[in-house]
Image 1 (cartoon, rainbow, N blue to C red):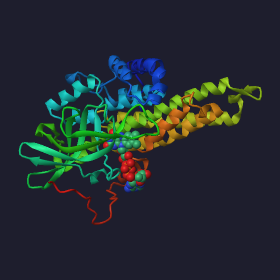
Image 2: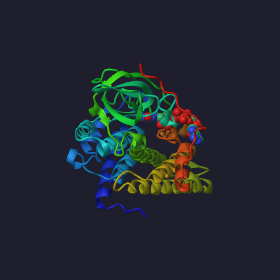
Image 3: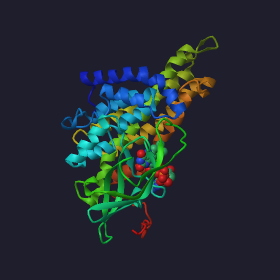
Image 4: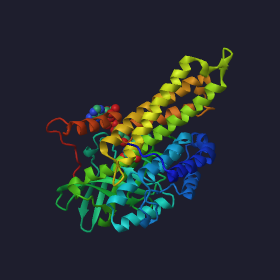
Length: 401
Ligand SMILES: Cc1cc2nc3c(=O)[nH]c(=O)nc-3n(C[C@H](O)[C@H](O)[C@H](O)COP(=O)(O)OP(=O)(O)OC[C@H]3O[C@@H](n4cnc5c(N)ncnc54)[C@H](O)[C@@H]3O)c2cc1C
């Protein structure tokens, strides 16, 4: 059952809408064209109190729920996907893992950085470890009073603009024994050996860099390691639990994009006349609009429900996966339908539809593909682990020097 939005939430949503429909919308096309990270959007969202809203009050945040963040992300993404993603990554994902599992010192560091405008980068994916993230080969070797990290991550959102990095690595003790997966905090430009290698030329979402990040004998003190609640052995599972918030956030960006496209199409079908009447007087157009609105309503319900499932922790794994799958797939469909309703104009770069179509395509991929998330849902429904590896398969791990 979804809680109806109370007065405070309606006020928050309206405040976000005003910002999104004003300065954020005005620059969205330029951000895409120039492929420059929108620091002005960051400042505007910071001034509005939309960065780090979910950070506890004790660390300077507002202790807001996931649903509050969702309302802001949804409004931002209606006009600018990049602003939506900045709202995700300053409230969910890496920052939420640090707030849940980090030491006092780590929480203070992350809160201060996010509240002053840094969007943390989360570094999980590697060239040879995508859907099979547990096959990562980035390693952290204990050497006396420090860890030495070596490895490579790619498709890291914010690589080159983000300063705080949460890096997933396999940890080995002094004797070379595998201890589990941990998350390390490192600050770009303050940590030797953290290198931004190259930026990907992406299809959409061009205002935020996707980068390859390498760690070359990067030394970190033990205080940089986030100790998962159940210890290193369960470290990967615990860190991925925090990632359920990010999945709800990614689904919300897709939701916002489809709503934005639908609203444009709704207005256009009233304005555009052919055969002497507005095109929304044709039944074919009416049914298309009706189907689009049904997809949006269902997607929104799934997202809000998944957000609410995390009232006392992180969103439920299955609900987060269901919401992201449904929303990301239907958003592609709805944006495509909206573009079609604009005829030739939809195909022009003068209108935002083509940008939305490029941007929205990402969400069935990043943050867990729709296929792999179906495995997550099925595994939960069936109540058993569904191993994807062949018997006897072991990921390659480079030996420490
Ligand atoms: C714009 C963007 C931003 C991203 N940001 C980040 C980030 O900030 N940090 C980060 O760590 N990563 C990030 N990623 C990486 C993303 O999480 C991975 O791309 C994703 O997990 C899939 O991995 P892959 O690309 O290696 O695809 P692969 O794992 O190679 O998959 C290829 C295809 O095989 C399918 N497949 C694989 N295994 C199975 C299976 N068991 N069952 C059925 N189908 C399967 C997949 O669904 C897919 O269709 C980002 C990606 C994109 C596109």
